[in-house]
Amino acid sequence: MDNRDSTALETAAGPALGGYPAKLFIETTTFCNMTCDMCVKQAPESGIANGHLSTALFQTLEPAFSSLDALILNGVGEPLLHPHLERFIRDARNEMPDPSWIGFQSNGLLLDSARARTLNEAGLDRICLSLDSLSPETFRQVRRGGEVDAIRRAFLALREARRDYPQGRLRWGIQFVVRRDNLHDLPEVLRWARREGADFALVTQLMPYERTQLSQTGYDTGTDAAVEIFERWRREGIRQGIDVTAYPRLAWRAADSESRKVMKLVERMKTEARCRDVFFDIKQLLGRDVEFHKQAAEVFSTAAEVARRDGLELRLPALQPRQQRHCAFVEEGGAFISWNGEVHPCYNLWHGYRCYINGWEKPVRPKVFGNLADQSLVDIWNSEEFVDFRRNVLDHEYPFCASCAVAPCDYVQEENFAQDCFLKSEPCGACLWATGLLQCLQ
Image (cartoon, rainbow, N blue to C red; front, side):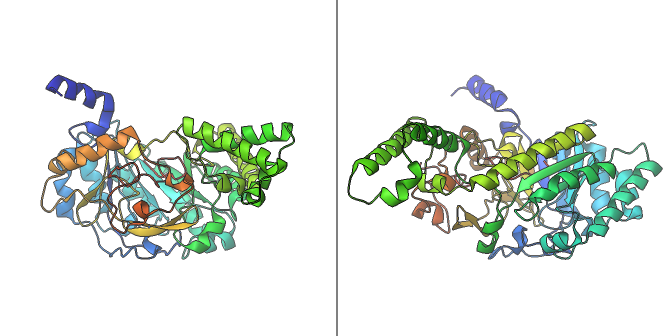
């Protein structure tokens, strides 16, 4: 490839292959004043140490600020615990382009009037507070150490900060993590948040880090394309008097008229899926909780109507993994910085942990491309290894491990991932972020 071809490729790829990151996700601290079981820090074997990002490491990032579209100052900790947070915001704001924004997610426990004012004056653009229910009991269960009243006080403080410093840029919103026990709370939470001054709301599905959390997940693991194929052939079976739900009972039975018809119908489903390169697990699809899926779709529809009517900017997650994958972290030129200076490509590969994908346990290890203590960010970003990683991710040529009939396999279960069944070295086949299930401030 000559230089002209390389330049054309980088232009077509957008921020992913630019000379500097377009977005920086900086973990200012890993200390936290809550112990939420949905947090990766509480996941088994996460082994995340407590620490604050040093001012010296933050200063090494300053050459990148003038190229940023966004600076997100949170990781697994509570940003308001960092003693120099306002300084970081002020220093970055002085170097960043005016249309760019600075923000972070918070549990809101430490957000009083004085802190809201100093954040607004420093140049903070967005703050996103965790709010998963207005019920004090449900909120305490989901957010261990949290109280709904703390969110109410935080919203009041934000309104006062906006009133007292109107020239500030501050907008705020909430993040709601969908669980089966709080799904129906979503529309009322959105109404309340908007009445209290919220500008936006992010809704995300739950990443289960414990087996006990699987019963709370509100999504199917078969992709939307697999579900579409299954449902269309299921309806065709009904038209022909064939009950595809009998498949598990008939699969190993001696051939008779009924079993032959069912087997033929299932084989036609699988053939179409193969022709369309859709991962297809018939047993998984037969086990879908169709009734809950309908309820969730209705709640999401109501939530969207509430947001539209009340003027709330709303981002809803997918109800099932999308066949058309989209890695916003890589595609939008993101780089992730740990508090100790390590540089990573995305949320999914920021920390080590174990999680559950389609009921089976999966180890995830962090992907590190360098450390700011040893190299500059621009050198790490433009290193051959990091550029190749991003270029390969843009192709999205990975298996759908969560929808695979033979998962978990030795490839994805290896403690130290080497390659998947497509012989790709990026551990992206089981990522729930790229399929639209998980969302964050980004």
